[in-house]
Each structure stands twice: as structure tokens, then as C-alpha cells.
Length: 322
Image (cartoon, rainbow, N blue to C red; front, side, top):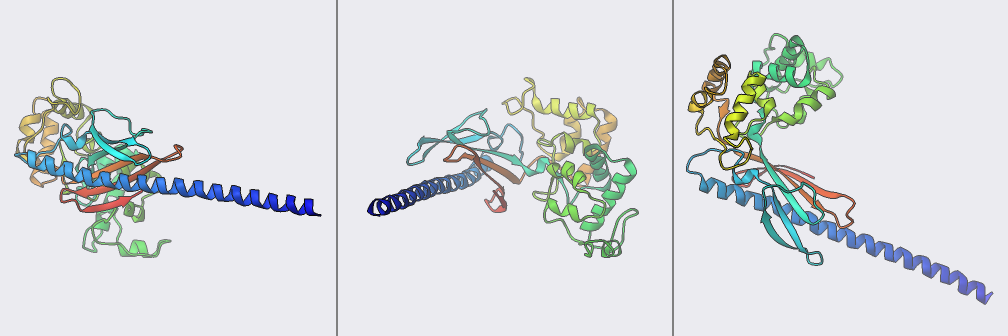
């Protein structure tokens, strides 16, 4: 009996010991990951300092892809035990690295402004990105306009309160600007599949204007530019070496000279489409809101900690996610 009791309590002791060791291990990993998350958050603060330096260094308010904020940064972990950091700045760094906390910054004004896009811009954008036929794209664009405008008058193919009350959601048309891109899913005619194609190219932050110096192909297409016109804008911006983010990149200094600067690169009939957009102040050459993506290694090495934030030049956090 004594032998059986000793064996029984030995098994219990071994089980408690193993359980305690596992708990300690999980706690250590949790604390290490918590430290990593806090270090990742500190990258947001450093990103703001980069924006401040960029603002002070520019005599004119112009933003382009060769600016310092557009280049990737990383915090290198010198001592894994203390997680002491040394900041380095390199031109090409992998987004996920086991030995570094990496962050990248992109301006929101390179995306299409959901709250200020005109009906023709919205329609062209929906046709090109969601591959809807012209009539369906125009109807969806009208519904977007009705959702964000303040009146109760429906556009030709739009939707107002009556159209929403009878739906499955039982809500009314907002009649106010979009607070986030996800609100598009509430607009009549929007489907998850169409939303998934449109959302990456849209924003509710910034000036409500498209930065011609940073706009991507989706944004340039929405302006009415053909593939030839888009290629012309990109060739202009890349400069002589044909590479983005280098010293010879060209920047347009003000909206007033967009037409003149792009004239040798873009067909005249397409340049004519840009003139009214400049007059309506839908095109710009600067950016005020920036999305920061931070990637940090976890203590286990099995996954990376990822954080995103949108900040303005004043350092205000407009959006935060993890």
C-alpha cells in the first residue's frame, strides 16, 4: 500500500510539475509577445517623426514616392533578452523578418476618396475594378452618391430611405459622408464580392483629393485615363532611370501645372478629362494621411505580430487595427 501511495503521489507531482512548466512557458511567451507589440506601437511614433522631418524639409507642400516616408524602415533587435533596438533605414527590406520589426508607410491620397468622387469617376472605377457592365456600375455609383449626400432626392438609379426600409436590414439611407470604407456593404446593390474588389483602392481619410504623384493604376483609371495614358503618367513619375523611389523621380509641384507637365506623356484627349477635375479640386500633389503597417516577429517564431494605423501629419491616430 505504501508503495502504491508513493507511486500515486509521484504521478500527481510529475503532472503538477509539467503543468506548471507549461504555464510558465506560456506566460513567458505572452510577456515576450506583449513586449513585441509595444515595440511595434513605438514604430507608429517613429513614423510620425519621419513625417515631421519630411514636412520641415519640403519648401513646397509636395509628396511623392521618393520621399523618406515612402521608404521601408526596420528596428533591428540587437539583444533578444532585452529587446534593445537600433533603428536602420534601408531601401529594400523584406516585409517579414525574424530579426527585425519592419514598418512601411503609404499615403491615403494615392487611393480614391470615397466621399468626394464624382459619379463618372465612381462608374469608371466600378467598371474597371469590379468588372460590372456600364448600366449596373452607374446604378451602384448613384446609390453610393445617395448614401453620402445630405438630401433625400434619389439619383436616377440611386436609393433613398424608401428603398432601404423595405430591405432585409430595415434601415434608412445615411445621407451623410462615409465614416469608413466598410460602410459600402450597407449600400443597396453592393455585394461582398464587388466590395472585395473595390475596398483596397478606396479611402475616407485625407484631403478628399487624389495625389497625382502617388496615385496607383486604379486611381488613374478612374480619372478616365486609358492604359496608354496611365503608362504615360507612370513614365513621367519614374524619371530617367525608370525606377520608383529614386532621386530622379519627377514630382508635379502644384495642381495648376499638371496638364503642362503631363502633356508630352499623355494623349491630349485624355488630358482634357483632367482639367475639370483640377477645377473641382479633386486632384492634388500632396498627402496628409498615411497608413502604417508594422510587422514584428513573435517569440515563438510561428507567426508575426501585425499592426496597422492611419495617422495624419499632426500625429493623430485616425484608425487603429491589429
